[in-house]
Image (spheres, rainbow, N blue to C red):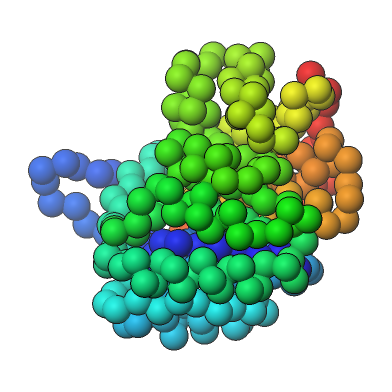
Length: 308
């Protein structure tokens, strides 16, 4: 089983318009609302690839049933720590040039008692898992140290994957052995403290994670594909050329496919290919909808990984 821990779920409102005119009237062409969150997306992606996932994290009392309904439809088991109030709403504004503007809410404050409840729940269920994923931002009232607190109660035999900002990542790394980090290019530069220009720069920057104890680093490069390195071997896989509808959720799709690849015991180059296929398939769907398996299979057959 793959356990996914989502500390800050959201209602994602994706708005498409002709162009975003700041300070002027903007008319919406279409609007889609989805109930998601980075680790919840991973759980759904795992299920769509035919493996079992279990989603947990904090959940709002006002909207929890809608989130659970979505997960039930996808065949994802779940158990949440409920918090008062409403879920945060994230706005994704996409214009005709596929330019994405994001406005992210922080949501309700989560008090310490609820935080301890989630730590205890993860400690209870984690031994049943082979892989655990913790990803995304933290709600108000929760310090970055919470990442380390949660991950420290997960048994050593469970492979842990982390996808989050620098301070949360550092907390995670300090708590236990991290099997994989999944930064995007902006997060990679922030963590490494340097600007990267080419693939060699990216691999060198990824080594900063490995120097701190992370075993593998999967760097998502958007339309350019992804890099995977363990500090000894490095691979690059270029994305297939596809029509882009929305890039939201592509990184989560990559993590989902990486989890499935790990369950199957595939080699590094194959795991990278699976991840890029899922991420690329995800951008072909509208809003924050994730990939579908038929599109994943189609793209998977067209791409390949190469050793660097």
